[in-house]
Length: 326
Image (cartoon, rainbow, N blue to C red; front, side, top):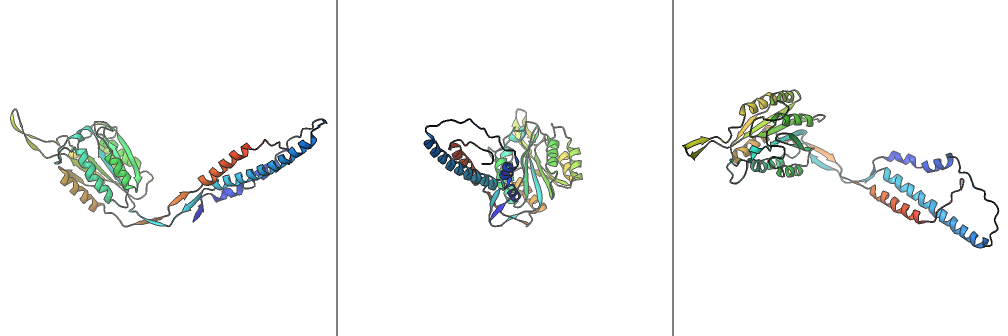
């Protein structure tokens, strides 16, 4: 069906006529008498000019009607479609600092960020009905994707993230602050899943203070700390134990989760990370809500384009000499 977004603009229909009738008439010029030996030819030219004037008036009237039709913003509404909607605002904050380039999560030749992209991408696709936002943080925090039901776009932008795009350090407090800013004015349940492999080493916001504000504003934060298992490495001094996750501040991540009503998880390889996201699926189950929407297609470019073409054709006609209320 056709729907007009601003039908009240039809009230402007008599505007050109009102302007013509209410504005003062232009003064006529009275030229002196002049003998014209070619008066017959001039009379025929005047008849042709009168016919051109009628065409011009009709064309301008049609042009005004087309412009008015475009201004009412006609739309073609399709059949109602049910979209799943859970009412939950789910945000993913992913660490893209320099330490995420380590390859210690049990997948050969794959960095920590590569593994996170793969596992978190599957998680995003399962969140049917959630409004999802993506935050990337390093030295600074950036809102990569605002809340949207388009899971494919969110996943695409996650897969395009590169290490160091937001700086080489880790601003965990700023990432939480960005999430708090993003939920302002948003209705529904707010959940943040924050994943990092380090400690807060940059940014202007203290993570503990950010977690306190999150608790006050109803933002539940689940934190995920990633980093490989301790390994025995043979060196010059013999076999030594090396902990790839020595830079991870688990105490801080636990405090953030506890203070905001969430949970802390520890991922040491790809399998444990997959299991964590499955647990989050259970903690934050997808609801079976629906929202009915009608897909719409804007139609105003058609009358607008027709008015433009018509105005160009009218410009080609010979110039018209307007007389007072002719």
